[in-house]
Length: 323
Image: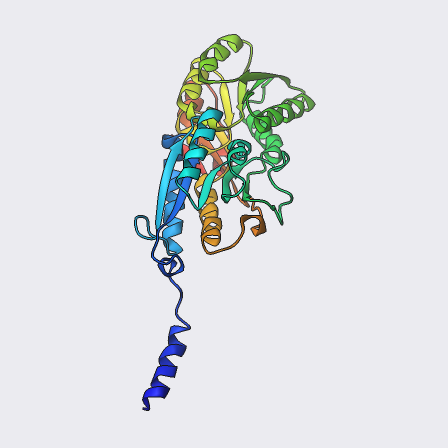
């Protein structure tokens, strides 16, 4: 075969090979800043995130570096860590919805992926199809799940009469969900009251305030709640309150039941978005995604401790039962 023809064939084959992430970066690892609520809560989710990135061709320590920071529900820590990421020149920040407004106050240039965000009603996105700006992510559609969660709670507790909704009063989205949960509960004929907390130090006094005044507790999840999940579920059990939560990790920590998306799957979706950004797509051009499947998790040990008999029909429909 002529040398010139051989070279053309080889060049044609090379043109069909996939371009590696390393080649896209010119040999320099890209830096991802993960700004989460709590290391213990987020560990399984970030593991799913990194695994998905590996599947997409990114290798930790070689083509990417991932820096983790944990805010524990503190807006000041969110601000400080975002400023640190800015100094470290990260390529993308992965965080949660209630931190977004604080992050955007520090930077409007670094791409931001919200691995978990409540309904986009607080100016996070221009639209789901074209979020615009430097932010995209996954909306967990919390408000649409409230009625379903209350129905499940009433199925477990047919004589439920008094409900308390606990939420972090320091952020808009938890407050909005608490307001909707109260209105929905009242429409169902329940006595409903909101219980606002501002920090970890408010949690124990809050439970003392409602002792003997409620049958069940609807917990609005956010970073502050997540960072204190074990304390909250322990105090709820001590106060003999059935708890309705937003995802299964709370139930594993001692809560009664949860209904919501699989958060590990959400972080895999977030990894897909980060991959697109690292390969050159603007975050504002990446549509906001939503979970398509929601999981019911029930803790039978907690139910037994509370004297609650979970209907067999509900157990049969549960995605996970802890016993």
